Amino acid sequence: DGNYLNDADGDGLAEIVTVDNRFLYQFDSYAASAAPLVIYTVRKGEVVDVSTEPRFLAAHRDWLAHLEDSAPEDRWTSRGFLAGWVAEKIRLGEGADAWQQLNAHWDLAADQGEEACVTGEDLEVCPEDQIQTLKFPEQLRVFLTQNGYPL
Image (tube, rainbow, N blue to C red; front, side, top):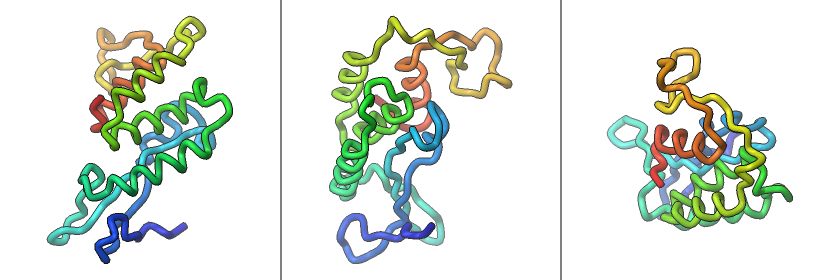
C-alpha cells in the first residue's frame, strides 16, 4: 500500500519504515495483532536493518504512542497486541518495565497454555523433547528471544 519511504530520523534521507510482520498472526488474528516498527536503509547496495540505532528513538516513541492509542479495551488479555507492544518497548530500552507490567496483569490462572517448541521452531519439525506446554508469557519470551528482541 506504499508509504514505506520516510525520513525516520530527520536527516533528509529516506529510510524504509514498516512493521515486523513476524508478529502478525503469531499470537492472534491479523486484526488483533500489533507489531513493532522496523527501519531499513540501503548501504553499499545491501538492505540493512537499522531499527536499533539510537537516532530512531523518536520514531519508536511515536510508534509506541500509536500502538497505545489504538490498544484494545482488553489490552491485558490481547496476546496479539501485547506481543507487539512488549517488542516496541524493548526497542525503546523499556523491555524490563513492559515485561513486569505484562506479568503483573496477565491472568496466569486462566491461561491453559499451548504446546510450543522451546527452541522457537515450528511444532512440525521440533524435536519431541523440546515441546512443552507454555503459557503466553513464556511463549512470548521464546519468540522475542528467537527474533532478536532480548529482554
